[in-house]
Each structure stands twice: as structure tokens, then as C-alpha cells.
Image (cartoon, rainbow, N blue to C red; front, side):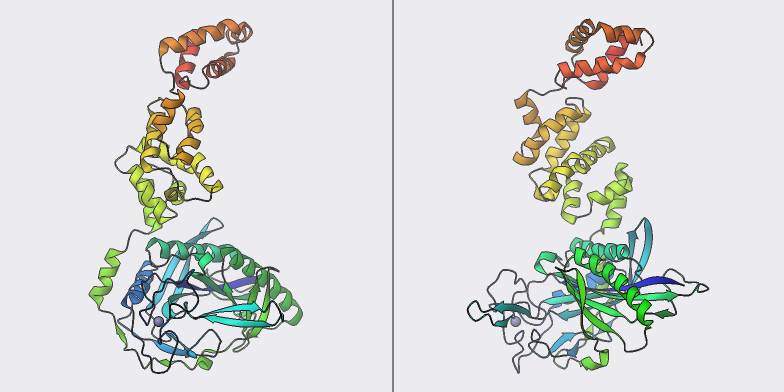
Amino acid sequence: MRYQPIIGLEIHTQLKTQSKMFCSCASQYFGKEPNTQTCPVCLGLPGALPSINQMGVEQTVRVGLALGCTIPEESKFDRKNYFYPDLVKGYQISQYDMPLCQHGYLDVDALGKKKRIRILRAHLEEDTAKSLHEKDPVTGESYTLIDCNKSGVPLLEIVSEPDLRTMEEASAYARKIRQIVRYIDASDADMEKGQLRFDINVSIGIVEDDEVLGENDLPKQHTPIVEVKNLNSFRALEKAVDFEIKRQIEEYEQTHELYHAGNKTTRGWDDVKEVTVHQRSKEEASEYRYFPEPDLPPLHLARDYVEKLRSELPMLPEAKAKQLAECCGLKLSDAVLLVAEKEDANWFDQAATGQSQVLVGEMAKWLLGDIAFFLKENNLGVSQSKLTPEHLRELASLIQSGEISGKIAKEILPDVLEKGLSPKSVVESKGLKQVSDVGEIEKVIDAVIAENAKIVAQVQGGKPEAVMFLVGHVMKKTRGQANPPMVQEMMRKKMGL
Ligand SMILES: [Zn+2]
């Protein structure tokens, strides 16, 4: 017998629209005074009528298409009824049995393995209000305030099949979803603003020795399903998955309790203690008393409309990386890094378009090396930095043409990156041009030979590899400005090698 974690993910992401899902209040609420972006509809006042925000539907369909989903012709909204302080109407407008997107997939790379994760559905709903838990400074009494600015913001829920088997797969899947919704501009998915949240479903499969399982097959028996709600960061997601796997194996070894219909529980995540805590036995779907939203018409999605949206989707990161690798002879793994964020990918496009493979290779090398290091230190994307595509191209050209060495390039980088200066101007103002003048280099070589009789004797006495010491001395004497391949060639000639 062995244990096999079974993990499913529900990802909530706020969609990028001007106004909320069912009213005309602004959907951008971050940093706004509480309850200033509300109206009778999103406050849930009696008699207020919702209307559908077309952009919300469009963004949902775009995400669905990017995830390989089927977009049914007919869809509708339903009421999900439950009582919670942050749900002002007493119900949430969501989608139950006819979601906008069904049966998609996402290929993820985790632990060096590619795996296809099936997506069950993606449906559109409205976000809830926000509870603020406060404490009276005088009496010490706790109380809760409600901010309805978030209430009614379009929210997309993407539900995976329980195909994930490790924390690494869950993390890779969640990260890739975020990358895609950002790439197609359907959501900013800014986790610090709460625009992307995860719920995980975890149980442990009990796999018998003679049980043969395909990649996405479920073991015949598994432990009760535990849902951990409202994880707000990748770190929390990863820690919570790890914690639940361990906790459930320990629990199973004591209780031997297996899943049967009904024994599901919901747990919360304590970010400080890094543990999950029991909240409640999970409500079954029937307890939400779903029924069609009577105030909204059903949705009909014309095929040509869906195909138009499909044709307008931008190239996705995977395809973009492949294209970049093919056109410019880059390693695919390098190309993947270069296009990870859409803005950075566009930035690199600007630098690379129309340039030779050699130059693009040189640009990529610096961008993924010293420049990446600088950007990481400063927590910047290249598109947010002072480096311009033109300056990167200039830097690569200077190196390629032999005007500066790699060493000089490193020396001028801080000025280029921090002050936004052009590499050419820094080279000129600091007098750092690489010396490629044969006469000048020869003078230095002769001096070095004269000063290092001992090494010269070694080279000529059967230790040709010692010539590199002499080359090193020349580079030092020229403060790294001599053209290294030239120095090497000339020195070898002088030594008769
Ligand atoms: Zn409103």
C-alpha cells in the first residue's frame, strides 16, 4: 500500500473591466475610501435590478479559450444562496449548471515532468464585500466593519479536475494560470491586492499494491476531502498543500477513516502559524439552493462572436517562447525566462526585432545574466527599469564589434541601469573603449615580455599553457581595455606558438 495525494484547485481571479459585473460602479476599488463605490445594485437593496456587463462575459470567454475550454452556446446565471456578513444580498450571482467555459486543460512542468491538468469549468460570478475586523482601542471590544466597494466586482472561478498529485504541480499550475490571465490582459491578478485567491481540495489516495493507475486516475479509496479556503499567495498555497498532505496521512494512520459521500470539511489557513484550522463541515451543493437568476436573461454566445474573440487573443507565453527560441537560436529554457511577463516579452521584442541571431543571443545573455541580477536586487521587471531596448541593443553591438570587452560592459552597466545612460556615452565619458589598435597592443606586449623573463622561459621551455599568464598581464596593464582575442593571438605569435 502507498499514499497518493489528490489535489484539485479552485482559482478566483478578479477580471479586468471598467465597471462591476451587474452595475455601473467602478470595479477598481483598491485604495478607495470604504463604501464610496456602491449603488443600490451592489449594495443588494430591495428592488434594484442587475444588468450584465458584457466586458465581464468577454474576459471570461477569453480566459476559457486560452485554457482550451469549450464555450457552450447557451449559458446562464444562477443564485447561490447562503448567509454570510460579507454577502449583502444573502445570495451571490454565480453560475451553477451552465458555466461559460467547460472542459479545458493546461500543460504544466513540475519536477522536470510535463503533465496535462484538466480544467473542469470556469464560471463567472460577483465578488463579495470585504469584512474588516477591528478592535476598539478603549474598551478592547472587537467589531467588524463591512466595505462594499469589492461587492459585485467580476470574479472568474477556474476549477481544475483533481489531477494534481504534488505541491510542485499545484504551484506550477497556479503560477501558469496567473501568467496566462495577465498575458491576455483579462486580469492583473495582483496577489497583494487580493485579485487572485486559491482554494485547494486535498485528500490522500490509499493505493493498493495491485492497483494500476494512469496519470490522472483516482485511487479506489481515499481519505475525506478537505477544502482549504482563501489562500492569498503562492507561498500559502504551497505550505497549505504540504501541511494537509502530512496532516491527513497522520490522521488516516490513526483513524483509518475513508471518504464516503458527505464527509468533507472546510479548513482555513493560519498564515502566521503555517497550519490549517478546522472551520466547518462542508455544505453540499444542494444547501446553496441554487436557482436561475430571475432578474437576468440567459446568455446566448453566437459562434462568430466566440471565434472573433479567439482570433484576437494574443500569443500565449508558451508559443511566444518557442517562436523566440526558433527565430533567434536561443535555448528554449532561456526564451521561457525572457517571455515570462508580457511587458518584458514585448520589451525584448522591441530590442530584438530585425536584429541578427548573434546580436539577439548577446542581448539575451546579458539580460538573463548581469542585468537579471540587478533587476532582481531591485525587484524590477526589465520593462519597469531605466534600461531601454535601444540601450541593450547598443551594449550588445559594442561587445559584438569588439569596441568593448565583457569586462568593460560589466563596468558600465550600473550607469546604464541606474541612470538610464546610453552605453556608448558611458564608454566615451569614461574613456573605456577597447583597444584594438595593433601598434598599441604590441607596445604593451613587448613591455610584458621584458618584465616577465621567467614566464617567457617557461613558455619556451615546453610549458605553452603559461602563455595565459602573459596575456593576463597585458589585460591588467590595459585595465581590461585591450581586445582579449587579439592579445591572445598576438602573444602566441610572439612566443612562436
Ligand atoms: Zn454598484
